[in-house]
Amino acid sequence: MAVLKIYNEITTEEDKQFLKWCMGMDGVCFKDIDEFLSGMDEKDNAVDIRLHCDGGSVSEGWAIYDKLRASGKEISAIVEGKVASMATIIMMAAPKERRKAYKSANICVHNPWVPSYALGDSLTAEDLRKSAEGLQKEQDKMLDLYVERCECDRDEMQALMNEDKFIDTDRAKALGIISEIIAPASAKKGSNNNNFNNMAKTGNVEVKQNLLDKLLGKLGYSKIEDVALGMDLSTADGGTLTVERDEGEPQVGDAASPDGEHVMPDGATIVVVDGAITEIKPAASGDDDGGGDGDEKDQKIAELEKKVSDLEAENAELKEKLGDSNAKAKSDSELAILNAVKMAGGEKWLAKNCSTFKVKGRSVSGTNASRSAERGSEETPMQREIRERKEGVYNKKK
Image (cartoon, rainbow, N blue to C red; front, side, top):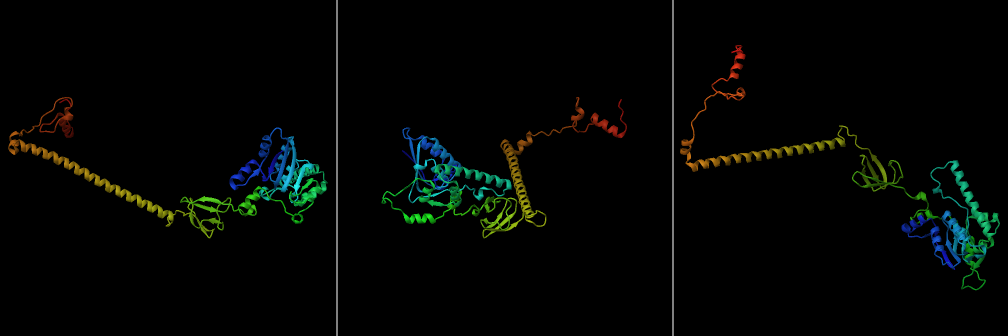
């Protein structure tokens, strides 16, 4: 006989992974049961389910029930501690004669319900009607199964589902939910844990816990409305301003953090004091009225003017250095010539070898004579023509 232990909440595979990685909790999904059955020895034809579970996902619960019934195995079930909601549906996979519970166990069957946060922010009459029809169909489906597998009175079982509370094993046996109460191995035959039974009979505990309820409880919230929604807004300096609202522009009175004045990218300033927005200063208009934008522009202009002045001074300095360099080069050339003259014999050598020839004015012939003639004592043909034209005595045939 293979023992199948269902000690955690019935969840989808996705929710199971979330519980594991985010909260360190475990769950049971359809895939787990499928792998359990597939891994059984082919010669093993019996599955003993051990239940200590609050229930969970409706769709996963029905899938597990169908899988166990379709396995062809001899199914038995024992309640260890408690079994509630969809876990009781899984228990129904075992026939009545093989459903048992320990004496101190508790069992709860109830009508299906939808938590308020799953209904959305607004519903029409048609939305409510469809939701009600879906719930009623699911309720009838569960009730049909209980009546069939427990062989109980339909009205009596429906009344129990309406109560939505845990019952002890004596009442569960009377209704046919279980067929046998297992006494503790160390107890004498026929002894009962009367104190616990009395507690169980008076403890009408409503079963309204699901995955989100557990998550909220883990985070310290009693209901979904207690969870503060927040927007993380980036400030102009790269910081973060958290405003507790899920949408829309921040408003005075919104809870926010951290305290201080936060300049936003659009120029507005949000002031937060004692965890709440006390003032929202609009961005400066930029008019020439001494506003912040005008001062900033004036400052930028002054900075640019200073840069221009610095560049002009640098340019003048470079020009001065270039002039000094050229002057030095000229001076060096002249000194070299003077040194050469001195080494050749000085002024006497210079007077002896320098020519005293003076160039006389000369006429230039050729096709370009009028453009290349040097100015001199003789008048060129072109000069003469220009002069005669000005004087009005020019004769072309001359």
